[in-house]
Length: 343
Ligand code: UDP
Ligand code: MG
Image 1: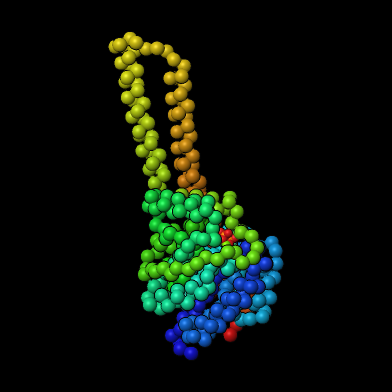
Image 2: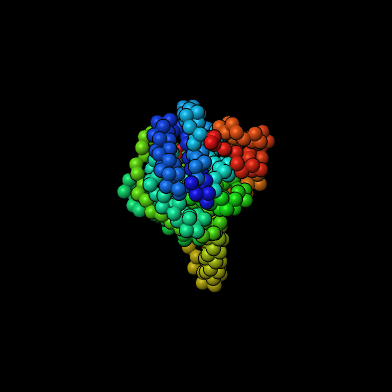
């Protein structure tokens, strides 16, 4: 086997994925064996499952997988912290030369991984998996997704269209990511900030293999809002501009009213003309306060500098110095290699 082959860690965040996990593991195992045989990756390449506080048998399955093969390992978070945090925890804990994140539900096409590795071998530090078509999505999802991508672009947030969290990152890129300490995570917009040489590989997104989506509408909207408020202060600027425009309008109206009352002496007292502007201004003010509140809320959360997650359990018996105890920002920030597979 060529010595220069990189070790690959496939990071898989899992939340209540008992239905799909055995199949995912079977396919990942086959993929690793093939890639190792073809000398694309080193023999100690492995899968790192991150159990995001599942309430079903997900962790039990991961444990059984670990017992069946040294190629599987896992991290268990102490509670559900959401996909982005689970993924970040896995990436920062992974010990490979190259990390690839995939969803547990087999929507990401594992066949694209070979192409991703080739692209990385040609010098890319980050390779984005981009959907070739959104045929498996409903019309509504397609439209809202595209509207959202355009909105983000309009707000100067750098984002790759039709890319979710199926991506390759080299050790160098992950180490750069480690330095971003924010707890409001939206990796899709954070990773383009890293720079380095990037590339894309297109793939066809499949249907979820089994189980139901772990991203209900509420979680999806929260993530969408995260993407805007964590990366763009343009809404604040828009509020300021709106405030200016309304103030100017109010000033003109005041001059006109004074002129009409004092010079022309032709004022007609009217209820509507009094209350309508009051409603209007109240509405705008509330809107402005709301938007500002969004950002103040963010500052509030960030200044707490709370740890993103705590690792409750790991499946890597070979590593003696796992630092699970102290609540560091990421519980293992001192120790990037908390998962070591058996030989
Ligand atoms: N996930 C997670 N924590 C959560 C929600 C989801 O780790 O709180 C994982 C989930 O197990 C899956 C991935 O994130 O591997 C994407 O979720 P899902 O496929 O349910 O989202 P969808 O494809 O429906 O948007
Ligand atoms: Mg999915």
